[in-house]
Structure formats: structure tokens, C-alpha cells
Amino acid sequence: MIRLRFGSLAVIGGSRLLGGSLRSDDSLFLCDCSTLERSPPTQDEDPSNKDSDTDRILAAAHSSSGRYFALTDDRKRLILFRTHPTWERVSVRWVSRRCTAVTFSSCESYVLVADKSGDVFSFSVTNPQEEGRLELGHLSMLLDLAVTPDGRHIITCDRDEKIRVSLWEAPHVISAFCLGHTEFVSQLLALPGPDYGLLSGSGDGTVRLWKYESGEEIHICNLKDVPRPGEDEETQRFAVSRLSCSPGGEHLAVLCEGMSGVFLFSVSGGPCLAHTQYISLSYVPLDVDFEDSASLWVLSGVTENPIELYRYNNGAWQPAPPDDRTKRLSKTIGENWEQLEGSVSPESRFTGLYKVVFDNMASYLMKKEARLQSEKRKVSPGLAGAAVKVQKT
Image (cartoon, rainbow, N blue to C red):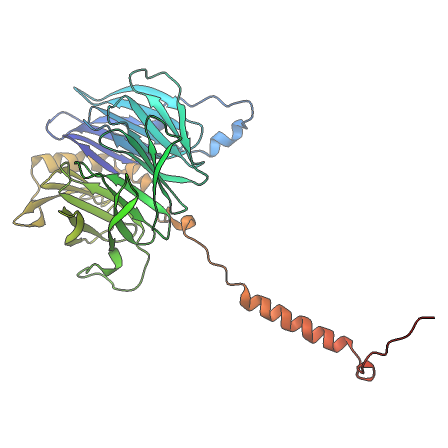
């Protein structure tokens, strides 16, 4: 994955993090989670289970200003970094379950993590050794969470199609539900600005725009209906794996898992989503993120050219010729690619989240017919007459 915020860059794959500044020629900061300390086993935990865990990084995020960065890995570690003036590790803490998403509060005082059991915990940034505090919980696996720019709401989504809006000051108070998706909700993105907009992506192949304070759906875009030049038009699943918007919220990039292209939209007045372009690629991109309103970075997953830059010019996104900065980043990422490509998995991470429809009516009718035939064979032809009632004396 790739994460950008105000010039701060993080490239993640496998157990490794490469962090640095796009505006500096300094060498990139390297952190390998496999070299970090492991949590001691609890009383109820079998120590042999830890041998099956990996150090693969599961989720990561910048703070709103880019001054902090946090990630969680498969060994249930929450690692906090400071990125300014240089990258340095601040703390290593442990979470109770493997996490699916991580984000910061708008004031940058807390790191919030969502785990597979449906709980959200907050960890202090200013007190990096303090243990986490339970904020809220779902009855289903959480897939993403977001904090609104004004810091008033925590928004969570789960595999049961629900988007829940909770108050930050009292997370047990549910402000609204955003309902309408027909499959798991995989991505959330709170848009900057005063319009109180929320974007959501789902396994049903739609991107939806909400007014999250009331739960009202403003606009829906079905990615299956978006023209994709040069792509196979066969019916397939469009599971949204990434939503990224430019710092001002003008442009939106959408990735679907397994698809070799990038959907680009603009958030126009209304507000509504307007499709502007589809970038067809020769590979399946691993991730995308905006540097600014005119620069889009694509993590390609190709060893020879692991990262590409697209520029917005004359109303269209076009590949930018490699400059010294891009060449330097590609070289550094390429040198660590053997460890970074551990994040590239041929198996979809959404496979087990889709609804499974059971059509058991056909098997029921077959069993019923077999039972009737069996009962008929048990009755002999001579005894098939009408039963005679015998009077008791």
C-alpha cells in the first residue's frame, strides 16, 4: 500500500515500511516489523499459536497533518511513528485482536483501530505507553472506520452492509445509519469541506455518497455501468478495495480488486459524483494515493517500475515522464521489493465476505419424491384397500 499526506510518503508491503519525504532527497526510513519485539503470551493463550502468525502489515494511516503515522500487523502490534522533522518510531503497543483498519482523530490526540471482532479501541498519541480504551462495538466484523473532519463523529462499516455514525464524545450514542449497500462495505472516506459528505465503497460494485449526519443517500454510482475502454466487459465482481481523494476533495480515485485500471471521479456541486476518466493499465495496481490536486501516485507491483506518477493536465490524467524524484523512489522500492512483495497475494481478501445463497428447494423436492416412492413400495397391492374400522366392545 502507499500513503501520502502533505509530502510525507509511506510505502508498505509484507512486513516492511519505507517512509520519507517527497520534498527531500534524504534516504528513506526503513522499519521491518519482523525485527520488533513480540507480545508475551497471556494466561489463556497457547504460546505455540504465535509461531503461525506472520509480521505482515494489515492497515496503516497518516494523521491529518502528516506528522504522525500508525500501522498494525498480523502479530497484533500497533506501531506509532513521528514523521517530522524526520521519521522515528515512537512506541509499540499491543491490541487484543487483529485489526482491519486504523485512523487518527481530527485533533491527532488519538489513534483508533477497528478489529475483526467488531470493536473500536482508541490509543493516546501524547502518552505513547498508555493502553487502549474500548470506544464502541459491532456484532459483525469491522472493515473500515473514519473520523469526520470536524471530529464530532466516528463512522464504522462492517461485513453486514451497515454504516454506523456514532458521536465521538459518546460513542454509545448512534447518530444515524447509512443503509443501502447489498454487500459488505469495504471502504469509507469522509470528504473535507462543510457539506458533511461521506463516500462508501462495497462488494456490490457501487460507490455511494451520503449525508452522514442524517443517513441520507445523496448519489450512487454503479461501477459496472462505467465505460472501461480496452477492458473485458464480462460480468465480474467489482469489490471496491481503495478510495482516495485529493486534499481539497476535488478528485476521487477508486480501485476495484483484481481490476487493471483506476476509476477517476470529481465531486461536483449538488453534491454528486461525476465520472471523469478511466485509466487502463497493463497491470493490476496495488494502491493509489494523491499527493496534491494534480498528482496521483500509483503503486504498480511491477519490479522494474514499482511506482508511477500521473499528472492532471488539460482536464485529463496523464502519465508523467520519470524525473529524478520518481527514479530515486523506484530505485529504493526496487531494492526492497523482495520483502515488499509479500503483500501481493493471489487470493482475494474479500472472498469470504460475500453472501452465500443456499437454494435447497431442489434438494428438498428430490428427497420428498424419494420418500413418497419408498412409502408406496412398502404397501403391498393386496392390502391397499380402504381400512375397516373395528368397533371396540
